[in-house]
Length: 193
Image 1 (tube, rainbow, N blue to C red):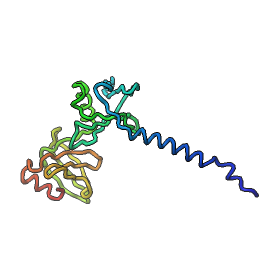
Image 2 (image 1 turned 180 degrees about the vertical axis):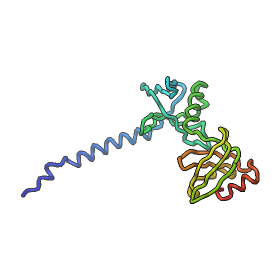
Image 3 (image 1 turned 120 degrees about the vertical axis):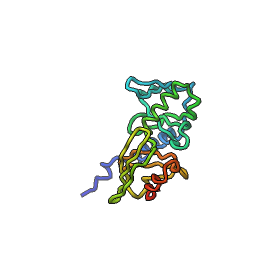
Image 4 (image 1 turned 120 degrees about the horizontal axis):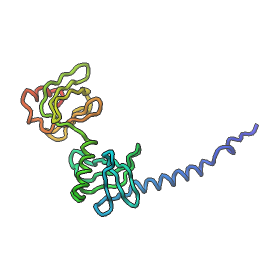
């Protein structure tokens, strides 16, 4: 019996070349840095409170705002991306200060929504049980209780006194100055910091 698999399968070499070319084009597009400026980009607010963009002759009905350096430099190198699951970058704002005030306000609003991170002002209680830490804190948004894993990267030092705490649901909290807490509050954090 003759083996016809070779004749019935598509030419894999042709598929490989096609995919390789598409990948090459996509890679070149991704590697291009497109700066969004007050002169070439028009941002507007949608009826639903989202951000829309007109750039390069194309209208984007909704865009996402992503910070390249969210903790150390939130006002520079702001990535504007398509609002789908791929979040393909449209362009980059070099410095928010170079944009009109109304655009700055819209972008800052979107950043606050995406990077919501309550600031811990007071530590009421932290106890560990069975590999989890149960926190009760006062934040700039009021009283809050959350749970973290005991090990790993739940508590990350951002500087000598500044910490970011991530709970088991991925919510982030900022402790801006460990030394602004009382001695008793710092003692409660001994296991974590």
